[in-house]
View 1 (cartoon, rainbow, N blue to C red):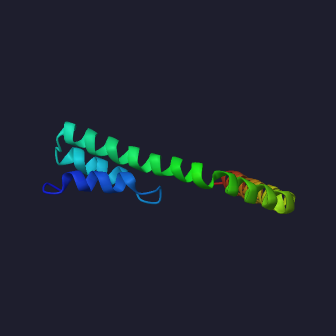
View 2 (cartoon, rainbow, N blue to C red):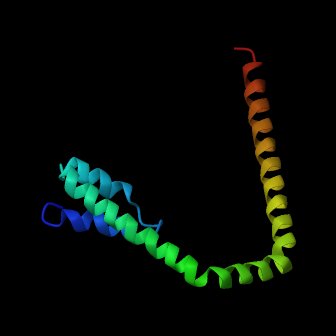
Length: 113
């Protein structure tokens, strides 16, 4: 980290969300990287990343929105129904498990010692 401290902070700051950023920021602090170097590298890297995202939105935004509208018109309702049924089943299962746990604990405490 000492010899490539700027690269160690700049590269993860440019990469998209699956890349964890926090360990690299924490390492920079733990290894006492210069605050000035860190702020410059981090700010420029984030500027590059978000500028790239903006450019992609400007170039491909209308095409993606058109594709999204066609897809959601055809499949939006079945997908929402599937999601809400899954949520309802999950809530029912969680409620059932809580009820079973509560009653099994309650019945154990009523047994004579």
